Length: 394
View (cartoon, rainbow, N blue to C red):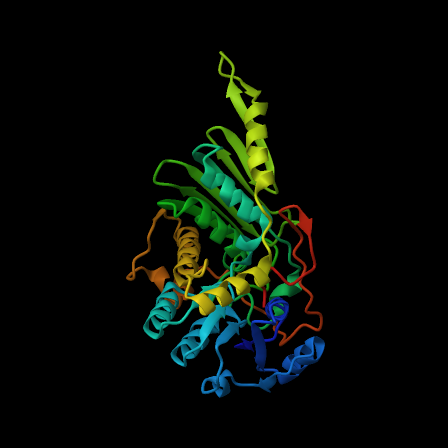
C-alpha cells in the first residue's frame, strides 16, 4: 500500500484526493498539510480521511511517506519538491512545475540523484479528446501539420487577483500564459514538439490589481516551416477552448471535428468525404481511457512506482513546457524574436531575471488570505462543461 501525503489543501487538492480515493486499493492518504490547519481539517472531514494534519510540511520529511502531491502556489513548488525527493519520497507536483527553469533543473537533478519519480500535473493529456487527437496526429492520416491554433480561453473576475499570492511575478510567476495555458502548451508540445522560434505580445486589459498579464498571443515557427499560434487569456467570456490542427490533407481538432479537402483543376477546394470517413473511423475506434484527468495521471504514477515503468509526464516534460512559457514572456517583455532553447545565462532562466525584466502592468493593490468559496469552474473544455476542480488552480 503506497502511503500518500497532500501538501496544500486548497481547491485543487480535491482533484488529487478524489483521484487517490478512486485508487484506494493501491494507496492511502496518511497526511494532510496546510499553513491553515482548519482547511486541512475541512478536507479530512469532507472525505472521511484517516490522516494526520500538520502545519509545516517539514514535520513529514522523516515519516514513511511514499508519494507526495504538492498542491501549493508555484513559488514554493521547487523547495518543497526537492525536500521530499531528498527525503526519499516520490513527488507529483501541480502545474506549473516551478517559477523558473533554474528551479526545474534543480528538481530534475534531485529526482535523478535519489532515484525517485517526479511527475508534473498535466491532466488534460489524460482526457479522451486530447489523447485521441494525439493518436490521429501520430497516425499521419491528416498529413504533416502546417498550422496549429491553440485557444486557452478563460474568464476571471477582477477579484480573482485579490488572493495574496496571485497576480505577482514573484509568487504566481505570471498570468494565464503560465497558470492556465500551461495545459494547452503541454499538450501542444506533446503533439508537435518544440518550436524553433517565436514572437509574442502580452497585455493587462481588465485586471488593474495584478502586475502580470491577463492576455497574451504568441506566434510559433517550427523547424520545418510550419506555424502555430497560442492565445492565453482570462478575459474571454464563454471560455471556449480548442486545438485546431491544419494538416496537408485534413483539419482535425479538439473538440473533435474532421474536414478534408482536395483540389479542383483550378486550385479551389472540394470536400473529400472518403478521407473524412477514414479519419473518423480511426478516431471512433480508439478506446476510451479507463480513467481521466487527475485520477488517470495518479494511476500512471502509481504504476511507475509499482513497476518501474516511466511516467508519461516527467520533470523533463514539465521543464519543456515552462521553457516555452518563459520564451513567450521574454519575447513579450523585450519585443524580440526569441530562439529556443533558452540558455542558462539567459535572464529569463531564473526567477530573479523574470522579476527584473517582466513589465509590471499594475501594482497589486489588495490582498486577501483565502476566499470563502473554493469552487473552481472550468468552462467549455473540448466540448464539455464541468465544475470539477480540474483546471489546476490552487
